[in-house]
Amino acid sequence: MKIGEIKRRWKYLSEFTMQTEIIWRKQFKQSSAFNITPIADPFNPNCFYVGGGAEDDYGRYTHLRRLSFATGEEEASVSLKNNIKEIYFTPDTQFILVLSDDYLLRIQRENLLITDIYDKNFPKTASCMAFNYQPIFFLMNSADKNLFAFNCIEGTKKRKVTKVEGCLSLDFEDDNHLLIYAPTAIQRYDLVKDKIEILFNTAPYRSVVKDSKGNIYMNLCDNNRKLLSIIRKMAPDGTYKDYDLTPFNIKFDNFKLSKDEKYLFLMDCYEKTNTFCKFSLENNEIASKFTFSENERLLMFFEQQQLILTKEKDSFQMNFIGRKIIKE
Image (cartoon, rainbow, N blue to C red; front, side, top):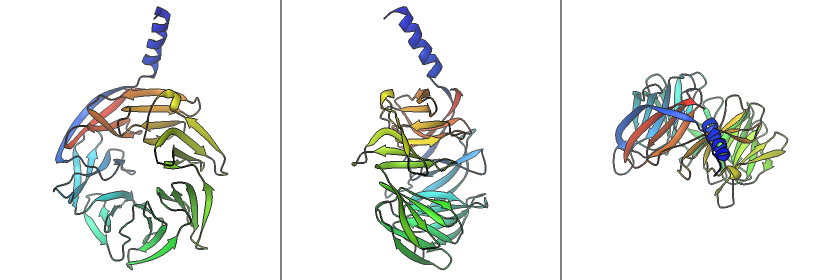
């Protein structure tokens, strides 16, 4: 290889290789099984939540933990007698709602004390939830066509059958319209008219993110649910643009949109390439990239804190690692 080519390649690596440093390690003496994706507290930039870690051989009695971004130390925790599917935060900042296998929990956000257990007539197969005005919660299972409106105070539920099977997530478009993201379509439920319509039939996709202008970013997959390394940006009118990441030789199974909506953060959490990338939507190129060591598994990236959360891959216990980005 010529000296000029070596210099050009070294310049590329130095400009686009992300630099990080480990700022803390934290171990919890429970299994490393995870029930939820680590999530930042939307009202406190200093902490985040993790769920999982079975206390017995049957996976029961998992924990919801609040940890410090700065140190990884546990600030509060609560033991639960069932799996955690998802957690949600109420707009009044007071409570965390925990979607579990058999019930819905309301927990005080400040101290993680359980205040209410809603189990009467609860749709036990639910894996997705959305709400705007409590006490009505909308829930669906990822694999069927039943949308439930669950009244947690009355302990009643009403069923509505969707047009397309499956649900990846639920999201309110406005006060009267609920978006249902099915694996091959986007549906809209009009709460006033009590009608469901198909907004768009789509290519198969695995996850979705919506920006402030109503554009929807979709992680495309094939009919067998295998990811394609393509992000589709769909406008509110149904037109779309594809970002094909295949030429960059990277794999990702999770992604986030940057706060300024100019970048995608691409995360390989299942270790196909063990990388984290920052992708420029404007320039259609990798802006920076970091490759983890073989003994680390990527869990989540938190943009505001510029922190990458990983864990020791082969450890049975929860051995977390906090990596701070020091150069992009």
